[in-house]
Length: 369
Image 1 (cartoon, rainbow, N blue to C red):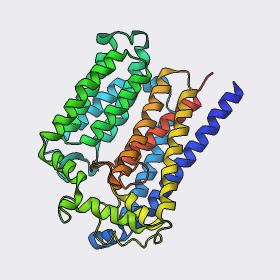
Image 2 (image 1 turned 120 degrees about the vertical axis):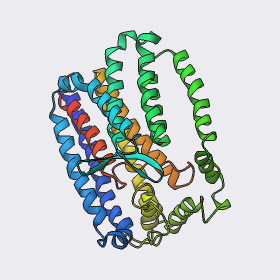
Image 3 (image 1 turned 30 degrees about the vertical axis):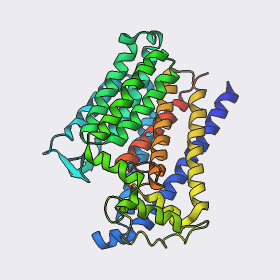
Image 4 (image 1 turned 180 degrees about the vertical axis):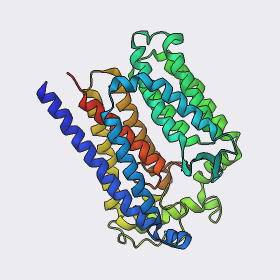
């Protein structure tokens, strides 16, 4: 028992080290990518870095608080937390309460703070799904008592996200929860019927929304409109291609001079690739692979379903968001509006991700063989 716990703690230390390195990389390249834009827009080259560091501090506070809360207390309030997060996210659909940025209403402004409640929702949804998988583990063969309630909360959550619209996060959450249902060993026919319904629905959501269809067409041939819809991905590819093997040097990016939009958020990887080249890009990708590897190792050490499925959900979702972001940057996915976890600028996402890490730390602290 002692050796297993020691091994679990060792894996957690490596896991946390990877996250801290990603945070450091993010801080460096948020400054590098945003300094010109920040100076032009706000008169300070470190404007976004200062805001990101505040997010890191708040994230560490959230991580610490969640890491010491009693697990039974967390489980007791999981349903309430989920429904509060759902209501908060639904408030973004009310124009008088929300802010519209880049065509989406994903932000609420309360008491002088602007945040994305969908980030709280993704945290709460994963924990609530894990809670139900633990609670209903003996009923997993029942469609009405076990599988349907999970599909219902996923469907409601995805529906609200699609109304914002946030198609990327809705897809990421669906895939994450579906993987958890597969791991939980629900009946194959339930899973097959879910896919049979979900895939045509996804295609319909794309083809009956002109802007989504345009994104697909742009993705297939960005050079068809190089100064319009294809501009962003073309500039991203130029940045990545300019980096070569070793890059042009940190802070020496040319694409950040108002060529590449959203260079410190959704397309920060493009700036990293430009400045550090294939070598630096490979290290960053390796960090995310190691994050997934050690996260899964930690999850499979637990013998409590709530611990296992919460950890798996967090690790899979963060890794999936990383994969989507990198894929968009290199042009193999259409643009989705998903940042690179721990690296891209964005306090709501950062605080949520560190809060997820806090719960994993809590699980390790309370591990009993």
